[in-house]
Image 1: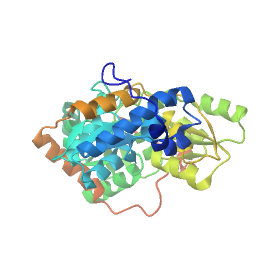
Image 2: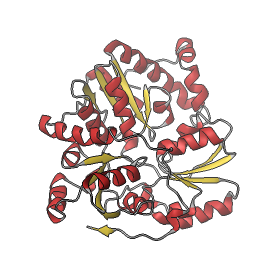
Image 3: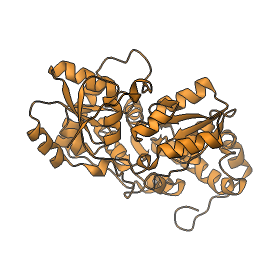
Image 4: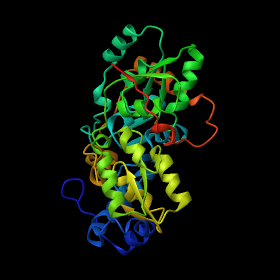
Length: 361
């Protein structure tokens, strides 16, 4: 069902056109659901060509969006960088609002749409540009590293951005450039604590948290090991440190995906938003996924139906003040300009067992 009362039929043509997608999602989507989803997928893909649009599908989107209509898939910054390189005039952000802002910052000449304006983020909402200005006044001369999971206004007050994949590298490089042994890392408290255990640089942190990742506990990991002793457990660094310490591997969404597709474990648990497992499963058919299901309510506001509506009606356009965008773009570009890491990003769990505290603001 889409566009009011308009329904698209599940025809043999639609079935044939969407067959490759069905092959990837059939273990996560029922045939009944598919008969409603496939016609929308076909219609969205038709509209994209007609309007010269691309869809950026974050790792936490549901499988029918991720595999069915996403032109670029991955983490928020990777999506925005791919969009900047594309010739498309319109970007539809299948993700949350700060991601759409980042896309607009990196693609100022493109139209950026988000299908639901209510798709926010608890972590991005935990800090404001005014907060960052007060922090800089309290710690004059110290560089500010800000996670990309923030608003454009917060990025504009930042020296350099980072992702969960390169946070340790960015912190160490900016400390070297500024000649300091302390760096402010905002806004995720758990990311900051986990970074602090990988570097000799002292970390000053903010008490922001992702409402999905903060729910996981070491008890959860212990119960998973008891129930599935042969499962390999992979955790995202936005989780509490005790969770990373109890896991087998810790890294960004991209690092976790690469781990599964390259190592092909028999059974795996991804300690992150549960749609991630559904999406990686499409590319790892021989791996069994145990799903400790913490859903992001904001990500789940994005649906095939409102993606279709966004494309059809050009809504909802995301705009960023030009002066704010220019400063935010500079912070992101400083990160992009850093030399690539010597090895794939991951959090060293052996080193992480050594207690290192952070200064909480």
